Length: 294
Image (cartoon, rainbow, N blue to C red; front, side, top):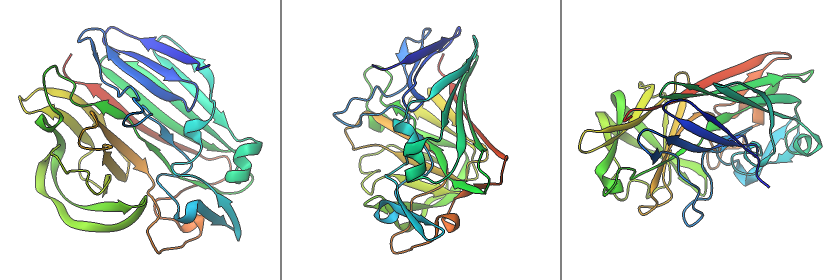
């Protein structure tokens, strides 16, 4: 049985499932709109999974640490594990996942992963905290994968929406093949702040960018109405994805980490985007979702 916890203020109501500490609802009592994708398995059966301790796929779904090989499936295990609600108030919820016998077999580190949700007016702030409780350096990646309903306004179509970057971008798009980085398209974004959600945009799977100048992306309808903004300061990678042209959602994904590159085999500690923590150190990262049209 799912264990779901709710939190509400004047503008927003959220629900979080203890499984994966996954956000399952982002609803506005004022606009009467549900902004988060409701996990219709016809297209994609998740809402907003947390990606830990890897982002994306590993080559052969395995990684090596000190000549020992470990199996780890795409996006890691945290999204499917039970978290404990360790702190709550009228404004926030904090969930925690600790290593256990099952995780040590897949990922040989002792850690605490905390995920906090805080409501501040029209803003939902999400904080990731990773603590090294091991007697050695630990290595990991972490990322967000929230899916937002699109179209969301009545009597509109997905292709009527666009993503608006905070600043003009000139950036490569890294593309995937069987979940691994397979190459890049030069200047996919070329001095533009607009990315229309046109048909065929996700023909090569997710759009993946590194070191965007912008730290905010806004989902906007062509009539000029701003729906929501995602703020992601400090995140070096950003993914944009939808399952298909027909799938009525778009994912906006800030990451600390990236999938393996085809044909490249590295030790886990040398993997691109990997984060490291010395003994007793903590990692903190925050992103926010701001609802614009309420």
